[in-house]
Length: 300
Length: 283
Image 1 (cartoon, rainbow over the protein chains, first blue to last red):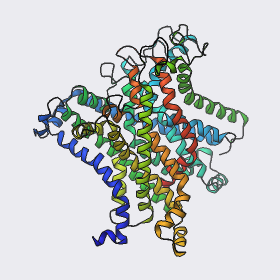
Image 2: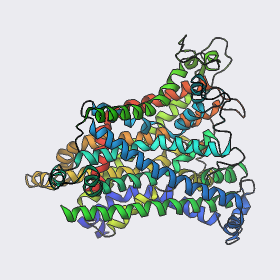
Image 3: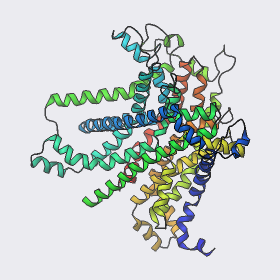
Image 4: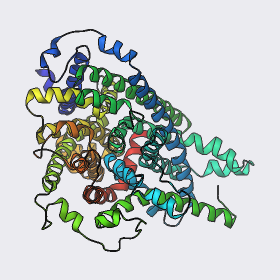
């Protein structure tokens, strides 16, 4: 017990409660989840939790076209939305950076979507895009642009674009706000120097502003890849994977298989695939962030 | 990169205005809807601005309208949300602050690995985590209890609180606490008298961030709560949707109730929040 009283034990004691909670609520359930992904566990038949079937769930997943569609759609969804959010967020940050009067008010407005619960974002777009009472169709009617209502959430391709638009609306602000704070921290001298040396605006941006912003971009990417699965809430209320599974993402499919069909073993196998996906995304950006930070440290 | 020509300046202003409109209109539209009678929502041609603003939608969701037999238990949902969010926030801040302080002030074995593990524990998608939690919580008998959900939100909020507080504590020079210790304070006293007051505004924003995360969470709550005993506001929102019909007026009123606390709290801490996120990451 002498270790516990020594100064070396202090940080471990401070971290103990946090570690206990994470172990109890995340690590242990994940172990259960891993085990159940090797069983044919069904909620309605509890005994099945103790039948070991090896990789059967996983091999069935690999043969399942619904799963592959959801998987591919999820990758596409993440890639398209993250990239567009970055580009739009960067654009917005650069625009707002040019405004001197009322910039604080603009920053406040930019925070607006960030305080929305994803389920609220889903609801608001479900309402606005509704083909009968929605704001968008009503506006298009009144402007005389359409004569038939556009079925935003009912037609497969449009529904996919709609959930992407909602996701982009929800998260572009994260990029815009973090990148704007990067732009505000940007030192003035290198830009002046570049201008003296005859760089035009594009060159200055390409060679000075953008490299400086890189760590901020990676922070935003890391934060976003941490909570990218929040899109589940939004899709759940907007389309719930419909019409006919055309907007099914990994997350909605897993909920359907686990809770509606009560095939928990299979759902947990999918859960593991989704966890690995999130892990890979996050680790990738986190490593980029660490590298960029080291690079910045070298320059300063 | 200063813009000289006036037309360019106007172009930028127009662009900013357009972007801000895109960010504001959807939310405002829902708020307007919350004050409309149902006839106006379904009217064709559409009614743009509410002609007969009313509080009936709010009365309706609390079951206060005279011709109503029974409303949804929205008051109960609100109370559940409040209790669950406040409790999990308070405990997460205490535990997270201890952790953040350990990371900011001490060197110890496996520090980096621990930090990354905390971060990564946050990446598990809510719905994927809900599957095993559903199994374990039902065996432990804490499914559909506030306690069960509080525990889950603790685990979600602690890593982020650690990340933020680590950043805030690192901004406070070590010398300050050391000076206090030389003057005869214990490390414990030095923390409470010197470092804690300096980190207080940062801690407040970490707290509000944790509160918002719990207040807005849906994926886990939707599976781990079943009845009015523990259902939260975001889960309650789904009560308004049936297979083919949606009660737009009721949902909008409920949405306003969910957004108001979030709105107030975010405005309070926006400055600290941005500073916390970027400092924690860059420095």
